Amino acid sequence: MSAIVDELRKVAAGLLKSGAVKVVIGYENEAAPRPVFLENAEDAEKLVWNDRCFHNLARYLNTTEGKAAIVAKGCDVRAVAGLIREGQVKREDVVIIGVDCAAQTESGEKLGKCLVCDCHRPEIYDHLVEDENALVEPQTDPYGDVSEIEAKPVEERLGYWLGLMERCIRCYACRQVCPLCYCKECVAEQSLPKWLPRSPDGKGNLFFHVMRAHHLAGRCVDCGECERVCPVDIPIRTINRKLIRDISELYGYKAGVELDVVPPLTTFKPDDPEDAFR
Amino acid sequence: MDRKLTKKELLKLVEGLLSDFEVWAPAGNEKVYSFSRIEKPEEISLGYRNTVTSPKNVFFPSGETVYRLMEGRPATGEASEKPKLILGIRPCDARAFLMLDKVFGGDIEDTLYTSKRNKSLLVGIACNEPSSTCFCTSVGGGPFSTDGLDVLMVDLGDGSYLLRGLNGRGNEIISKCGSEADKASLDKAESLDRAAKEKMEISFKPPDSLESSEEYWKKKAMACMDCGICAFVCPTCHCFDLVDEGGCKKRIWDTCTFPLFTIMTSGENPREERRDRIRNRVYHKFSWFRQVHGEIACVGCGRCIASCPAGIDITELVNGNNK
Ligand code: SF4
Ligand code: SF4
Ligand code: SF4
Ligand code: SF4
Image (cartoon, rainbow over all chains, first blue to last red; front, side, top):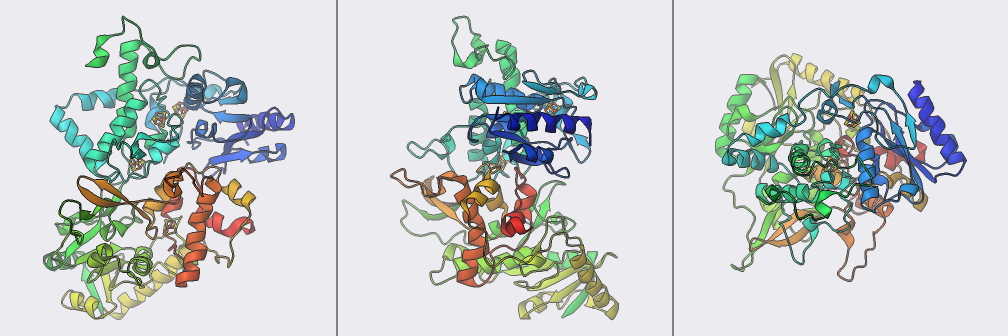
């Protein structure tokens, strides 16, 4: 057993034993890690850690009862920070067990988000499980894919997205898995008034995704969960990252990094860039 | 009737079928296969294992028009001149249609479904290599099951296929193709069947009564995120909602795992808790459908296990703490 897992279990057991938290949200099942919710110190033995701990467990913070500790990678921590920032979770109600993370891999290949990751060590934490080997430099141009699509003529771009969107079956997993999509009632399901069609077709699906991306502008932390879970493999991250880049270029803001900076889209300044309203 | 066909002869057979039938078959890129309308034989991929989504969309598509509001008359679904033929359907998915037939073709006939399903033909392909999430043999099926099929194809592994006609209509479409299957091919198919059964990684006997404690379901449901993947990829899940869109009444897939599924106009929601929703899905398949129709409404295709974003495994839910 690796020193990392050892440390993880020790921290979790300590928190549960002392009563500091009611539940530890982590990963179980070495072969195919999945979320686990531990309430007893003895169960800390179940915790695992490897390069297939995909889930962003921040998703569960506002559905678990009582004070929780969460095992979190750098990108996950950004989502926790977002939830704190947006008043969904109180900082004092969550214990962040940050883990240094080199990359998560699918059939031996690093996930797209991990290739461009600049948070291998979480930026905010209460306990840090260190792994010096994990602190690697980002490998590629973080927005290469976005620029590539942007370079296409409008018609072609529309065709590209409509072609992909035809596949969407509206299972809403992309939304449900997203830690920042916590609305009790999503616009997609509102019926009075009805904003968008619920029957799946290319245009309606695109509408849903563009709407969702805009509601996440300045909030999406690029944890990539939406894209990972999509059963029909729609590259949802690309849409979100277009907005991540815009927000960064327009306002110099990055979501989920600092707890005390006011997100640009929740406030107004007379000198805000006009380009935001193109 | 047993015929033996080369790959080329199979493509020729499909070519011929295309003029008499509306052919649906697995097609797609390397990652996402689904059952799609086929125009040319080359579009078909038989090398896939289980498609991500099931073929239920052929007879029960999401977003189908029930009637047009202004015209005031029911549309009988998309009027298709030709009967539908699904080629390359897996035995589990073919069994699933027998279950949907009971739901949609019961005392009150659902003509949107039956108008497409009646006269359809199912040409299956046996599973030489079951996936790690498959468990058809535990719920009454098998990788070479012929239930619900008109023809079963077996990939003999040497570039040729064995086609077994299972009834009059099945025999009719294959009677003129290839050559009569020799004994060696029949033996080969039999040994592939045995080998496939041995390769099944999940095997269990569904319990007569499921776990019922609130505590149990609460615990099992904790990781669920209320999405609809499990039901939307499932070949037997058949719940739908009705919506008014584009001047039409349409029906769209719905699922008991969505929190809004049971909400009433008063705001009351009898299945507000996640534990109740997950329990409902499992009970419907493994208990209530069994009581009403005499069989389990899960064919063990394993899609929900493979696609669940939270790693929830229906076989674990069913088998409770005994596993
Ligand atoms: S984006 Fe970074 S922190 Fe997140 S999983 Fe990939 S490497 Fe780990
Ligand atoms: S939109 Fe996708 S990448 Fe962004 S926070 Fe939500 S799940 Fe993560
Ligand atoms: S997860 Fe994929 S299929 Fe499901 S609603 Fe989102 S984009 Fe559509
Ligand atoms: S419940 Fe799961 S395994 Fe059973 S038929 Fe549906 S998708 Fe397949």
